[in-house]
Picture 1 (cartoon, rainbow, N blue to C red):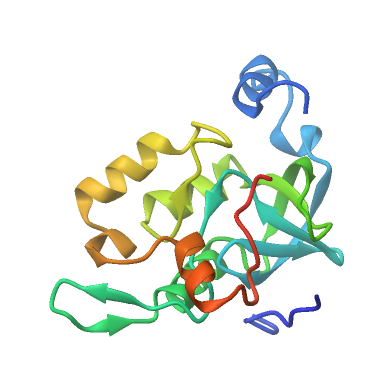
Picture 2: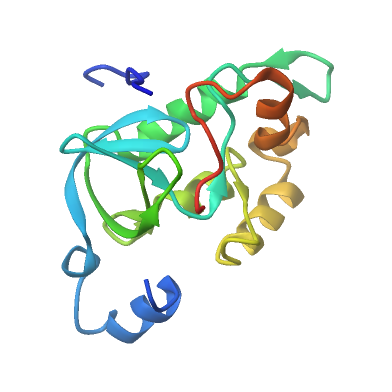
Amino acid sequence: MHLRPLFSGLAALPLAATLAATATALPVTALADTVGDAQVIDSGTIEIARRRIRLYGIDSPDPQQRCDGLDGRSWACGLRAAAYLHELAGGRRIACIAHGRDRDGDTVATCFDGAADLARAMVRAGYAIALPYVTEDYVADESAARTQAVGMWSGRFETPAGWRRTHGASAQGAESGR
């Protein structure tokens, strides 16, 4: 399935253990499988040098998904999540450490802008949910986002996977990390 970017122009060891063991000796880029300027495809997918990369360990809203605020008003949480990922990564030099491929053949990876983990930033801002059955790396970040009522946690929303089951998978496809 080919997707147009939303913004034109604009392993063996768990990752935490790998980074902890090498953090003092090597920068993230030395561990990365892919490094380059990122183009944002949707709220959970970037592209670097024509390689589609889904963010590992999270699920984010589909571009067409809407969420409800506490005031009952609907808002475009999928587009807002994609815009936030664009703020984090769009056009920036990003380094990704691959964990494998998903069922569509896209790389699933943990990606960094310097030392900042993009998936962690998405979860902390409330624009993605943690997938604890994939990794527990982002569970505390999701709890903090929920407590602070930010992003999707500022109201009511259907989980991205639930939304895709109800509305059919669209651009984003499936959860990251499989």
